Length: 202
Image (cartoon, rainbow, N blue to C red; front, side, top):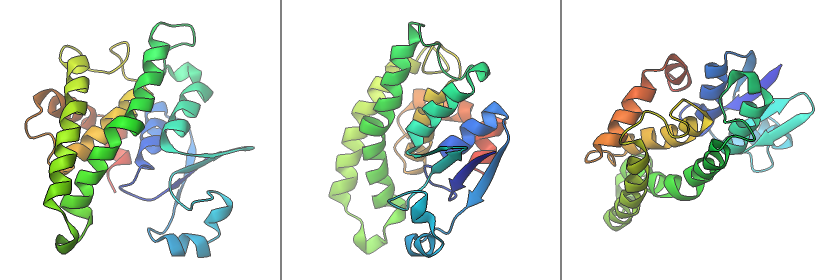
């Protein structure tokens, strides 16, 4: 059985969300939030940087949320959560999976740090302003895709929506979607999916 190593309210929610969408059996292995506790539990043998998520599927052990989601979408190709290899949307799918981590997530994570994660005395108004400005470019790009459709690729739900949608949900939690009606509607739509609610419910 697939094993997903997981800490709530982290990037591990992404593969959990996808697994729930697929309806495949998996074992959720909850880890301590503290890195030191994970090291003491022997988790470094699974993930060399002791972060989450990690996934074990038989002889396959891997980490990085986007890589895991792409692997799962291809592993369970019958679930139709990625465009077919020869389909025109396949290249676009790769593009958005990469865009999610390389371009969309960094300003959102910085905004989360300086609104929710750091103590008040550690937060920087200048860093938050910079993150908001950087995210506004991301939001413009994503809104141009989503202004007339529900989903990122082929206008149907795919693993690309798990990646982009989870980051947009983080953006909402840090106040970055206040003036982004298209992305707010996108997150609202995704958040009503039962699999999303399971993955983000704890």
